[in-house]
Length: 454
Image (tube, rainbow, N blue to C red; front, side, top):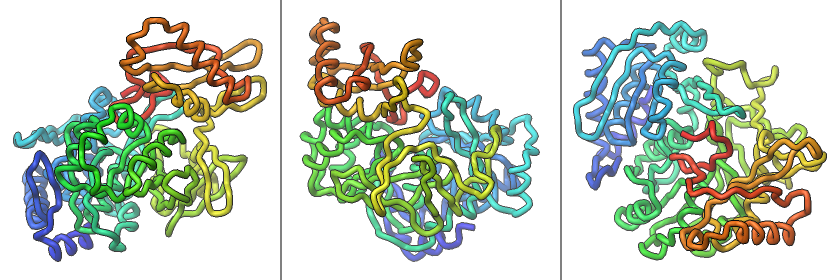
């Protein structure tokens, strides 16, 4: 199953594969460690088709175990530290049969769980003798959905060799973007640099120390990077690409990053838990217009919503109805504008605020509020109104300097005044609440609903 990867590992066995905690592991080590893990799995009677929960951070041993489980035709449920609060829920949803826990340099812990897994999607994988992958997403209500993938389909896109680039593992391997980052690096015998601390200073320090060339992050992280000014304290000249995705990028943030780091190309990525990550090309570094697709993907827009047909699409959900149309298209829920080969993602259809029949895109209002000095983070959302259906509200976290001024009413007036000068009246927030809490999750993604907080 991973034969094409092993061939590249052998060809480039002296290259760095993973940098972790300041230590380098080459492809010879990785190949040997995969074989050791295969022996471990057989020794502990882990058979093909077993649903294996892997609790680990992005360590070299975790990478080797993941590859060994794929080769052993297991169904893998990766859980990173970012999912700590939901581990029990995720384990029950996935119906894990065995759990393998990796913590630092401590020997692995393996536990057999009292569950039987007879789900039809698992039966489909076992019958085909294909390894599987279970990833979790949140629906509009915040309820977690367990998406089941076939590794045989996911790995196809990595068989064509591409560029060898030193890449930071920012997104974790229980996230479709983290999976894409990892396997792009492995398939090109590149070096992937892992970090335990994802604060702006720690990330910038890693870029400087390890001459990282690709930084795959979220718009929220880039906004925090600007606020921290960590980019002024380190040498980031090695960066060739900054890729971003997982949520709508504020135009203000994008243009500022492009201005400060002209040596790095900014590339918007697009993917979902259900269909994988598509190839993409931004119109320019400071543009939100992007062309997406590539071999194995078809696109169409229906009523302004993007739909994708993908060879790498999941088999289905363990705990929810199929989200595909009868003819196999996945309804992404992302509202888009189209201009020739390019499109601009405006936001999730479930997040749209309806004010008296007028649509308000939260990202548009958030972008305007972020222009104000003293705003660290902002989330715009709708609240039911008996008069106009919904009204626009905003939750704002101020910068430390702004928090020194206790007059929140004055700050709220400034926000409303600025919005009224830049937006149509129905888009101006009616209510503004202030918070000292961060408005993003541990995965550096904006929290739009309390239920999405992980």
